[in-house]
Image (cartoon, rainbow, N blue to C red; front, top):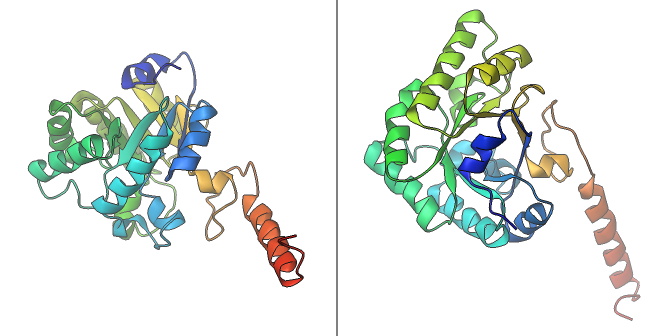
Length: 259
């Protein structure tokens, strides 16, 4: 079982589509790894789907370290990317490198992901110079939800599209090995993908990206509070779990279990 690395991801561009899903714990990470997913994102989306927050701004470094450790124990083949949470890289380069380093040394991630464009490139370079691979994230950036004012499509005007393309190229120049493009027009995602030498990973950005990422709990039907329109549900495990628990309760109360 050959380990997926950032070099592998770079080499897959234009040759093979890249698969990526989120995971937040040991058993799910193990399942994804055995299914041979290319990359696992320990996303700060855990704030929504695991911790019950309204958005990702409440997720802490302690939260990310806790869940990244669990995922790294379960996945040995996939490339593990950990989100750097809100304000973990905005207070200076020193803090950013220290926090990124913790996700690698303590959390055992293989790379970190940061939201933002040209404005964070100095931080990205510093983290990479410390020997830590970085994935970028443009478009709908959930940590900026209060500034963006919602989860709608981004970069819909010509000016905004040019800004996103410029940011993508700036991140590439800064050394990121891949960039997530979230909730942007399909045509723009295709253009960015063609103009970059690094891989693009789409989420709500059409089929022309080099790869795709989704939240695991969304595709399994485990998170019912909100489901983005671009999500495809591959199972309804919420109903399966509900039925199993209901049967258990019925058997306990009826004296059927244990026999």
